[in-house]
Length: 104
Image: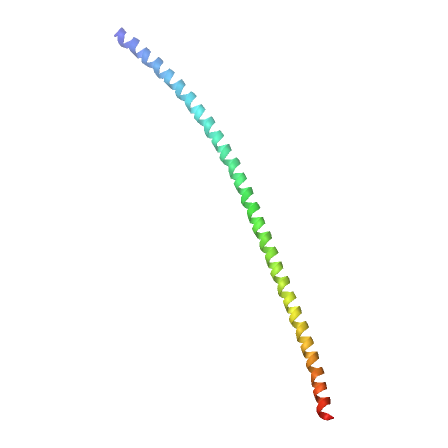
């Protein structure tokens, strides 16, 4: 019986040592998880910032492209109206010249 009691005491001591080791290991794991979580959050923030910069850049270039297209369109329309005005004006002038020639 005495041997069983001593053996029981040894087993309890070993279990207590094992429990302490497990608590240390759990604490280390928690610390590593915290570090990993902080790293992930930090990198995620950087990714979001870079994504926002990319979106801003694309939208800015798109706006610039649209403005350039509108400017080209407006210039083309202005040139067309100038040519149309010149043609209309010269057409009237030609009519007057031809009428003058035939009425003489």
